[in-house]
Image (cartoon, rainbow, N blue to C red; front, top):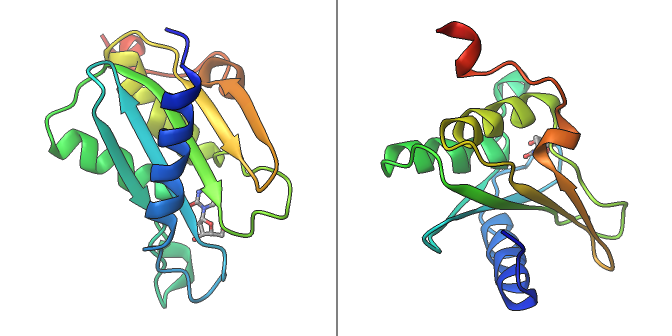
Length: 141
Ligand code: THU
């Protein structure tokens, strides 16, 4: 599925809006993520840090957890990720988030387009390019 411009813009806007709710007092690096599903539903997340620094939850992971809680088991077609320090180069999902995103993608056999967003730039990279040879549910049974 190719994303239309309008869909892409609204997904990115949803990720920016989510980043406004980030709790990132330690890194001062607010992140927002937005997941787009086949039926048009969008589920967002923001990063949630902790006084015990290593316990920080990334925005993508929060969004995926919300998606599972909402009953989603696949159908992931696109993801937008934004860092509010958007003057830097576009954020790309961390390694753990690539794996977490892969779980929902694998369940529906989709290869979502990941929109990596900075102030003036959108990099479009498929999840399979970000995480080649991924370990997934099929390896377990
Ligand atoms: N972060 C995300 O939310 N997603 C990523 O893919 C990379 C990093 C967050 C974690 C932490 O709260 C802050 O960015 C700085 O690492």
